[in-house]
Length: 271
Image 1 (cartoon, rainbow, N blue to C red):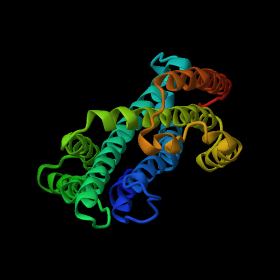
Image 2 (image 1 turned 60 degrees about the vertical axis):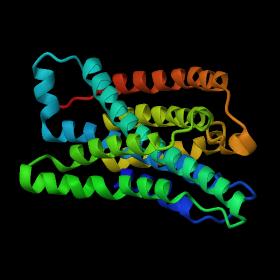
Image 3 (image 1 turned 120 degrees about the horizontal axis):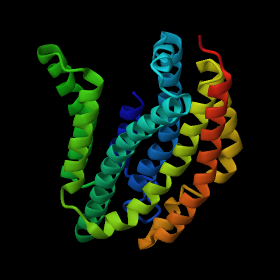
């Protein structure tokens, strides 16, 4: 549901061609990056807390520990798996957002020639919306007739269709401008995942989620360092050097929460 929400924001909102402030792709760019940031943070929390709590409450954790799996290894491998799942989400949303931004640019160019109001290029809009609609429908059919698992199938199909949509009339220059801003939004999500994992091994799901809400409120003043949509205005870009510095600044936070999680994991009795 979170993935569909993000894809819906990235694909449909740009068709509301208002509040462009003289820039045809502004709405598409803001919608895509906003979906990746806000929904991505929610995804990183809920899709981290749930797997850890499921392992603990179902008894799977005790079986793994009884099989001589180390607690640090279990904690870090589960965190790595959650991060890989988030990357699939992030790449899918980024591809759809890039499709929408490219469609807005094409629509703006056509409007400049005809004197009409700038709108999204029709085929680009259709491709972006298809990524939202087709995967659940196809996954439901495969689940019904071939017993494919619904969620993994829909996720895989969304990724494949999103990549195909982004390849339509692909603009290397536009991608070079958009991708650094999208990559920046992975870093706060990584911090949230490490923190959510640390809280989930110690407290129940509701308490862990509430603590993440407090962390989100504390981080609000700093989220502007990651959300740099305005830097893309008027042909601008985000330097990759800035992305590298943001990654270096994020690593100590991720490491600190991971170490905290390992410590809380070691101190807790799950027998």
